[in-house]
Length: 125
Image 1: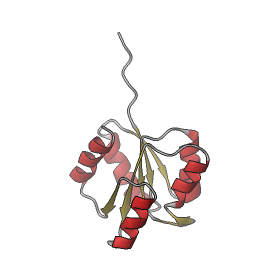
Image 2 (image 1 turned 60 degrees about the vertical axis):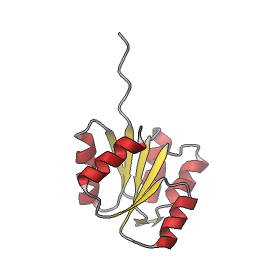
Image 3 (image 1 turned 90 degrees about the vertical axis):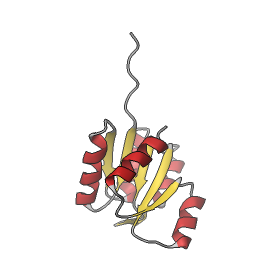
């Protein structure tokens, strides 16, 4: 009998611990393996330590712009397969920056749980 494929790994990059924990619990309830990071440095380290299938990325982090995570992960050859930005800023310039950096989607916080779960299934398909 063949072994089951491992569950997709999701990295939540969010400095607000309660938000990160809520998203983590939601995704884990659907069988995803979830890691969290609260800073650019921690997120780059997490990407370097383990391949990530999906990264949910906040842009406002205590040690810099969240898009710096993509720069750091690329430098160590560890970009997540898919990156989706979760931001509180509804600004076309920010959306354009995220798209130019390679982000698949930009979602405005707060994101409804059902939308996040549907999106995760789509992004990981």
